[in-house]
Image (tube, rainbow, N blue to C red):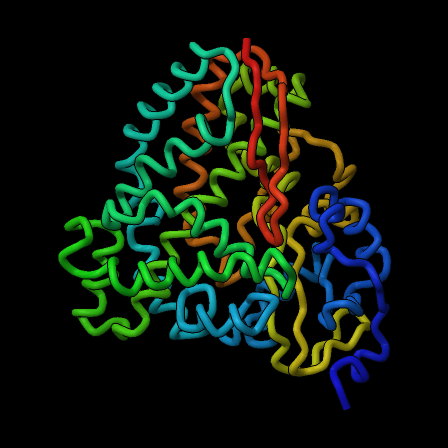
Length: 395
C-alpha cells in the first residue's frame, strides 16, 4: 500500500504552490489550502501541505514526530547532499552541531558588531540617498551581508564573487523536483566543492566563524566529514534570507507610507516592525519534514514515512492566528511569526539578521521621507520570497 493510499482521509488538492504564477502571488492559493483542512494532500507532489499556523508550528516544534534528520528538502537528491548539517539533524547530534555554528551568532556574540553595522548602514544609506534612485537589492540590501558578514565568516577571497549565485541555488534546490531545482544543482555542486576544497585550514581567515568549525573538529566536537555541510550553514543562509527581508521591508514601506511615518516618528517601533515584515513577506516560504510515525493532525492522518511541506508564509497569513492578516501593521506585535521558523531548528542566525535589518531601517528612518517604487521584479524562486530588482526613488 502506498503513502497515497494511506492518505485516504486527507483533503486532496490539485493546486501547485510551485507553479510560476503561484510563487509570484501565493496568497489566494495559501488560503485555499488552509480552508481545505489542517493537512492537505498535494496530488502533484505526493506530499502533505501544512498551511495553517497551528499545524505548521506543531510540525516545527515536534521534532520526534517530524524529524529533520532525514532531510527538510522536497526532493531526495538535495536531502542526501546536506544530511549531517544543522538543518538536517536531530536530538543530541543537532544540539552539538548547532552549538558550534551558533557560537558567533548569539545575541551576546553579535553585540560587538553593532557599531560596525550602524556605521556601514549610515554610509550606504547616505550613498544611495545621494543618488536619489537606486536598486534596493543590489545597492542597499546586499551591502551589510556581503561586506561585513562575508568577512566575518572568513572564507577565502577566491570564490566569494560566486556566493550570491550559490546561495540562490542552495535554496532553489530545497524545493520539489522542477526545472528551477534541476538548473540549480550545477551551482550547488560548485558550492559544495568550494566548501570541501577551499574552506580549509590555511585558506580561511584566522579567528573567523568558518575557522571555528575546524577548531571544533580539532577538539573532537564534530567529525571532520561534517565540515563541508557545516560551512554551507554560513555560506547560504547568512546572505539571501537577510537580503530578501531587507528588500521586502523597503517594498512594504513604499506601499504603506502611513506605516513608514509611524516608524519615522517613533524608531523604537523598528524592532516590532521587523517581526511584521517577516510575518507579512516571509523570506523563506517553507521547508519540508519527514513524518516519522502516524500523526493525527487535527483529524487528518499523516501516515508514517510520508512527507509534509511546512508553509511558513501561509501560516503567517492565517486568519485563525492573526486578525486581518493581509493588513500590514507595525503595531501588530507579531512576536510569534514563523519567518525564522520555530522549535529546535529556528533560524540560528536570527539575532544577526535582526541587527542588520535594524541598523538599515534606523538609518533610513532618519533620512528618507518617502520611498517610490520605480521598478520591481520579484524573484521566481522555489523557497525564497524577495526581489531580483527593486528600483526605488527616495525623497
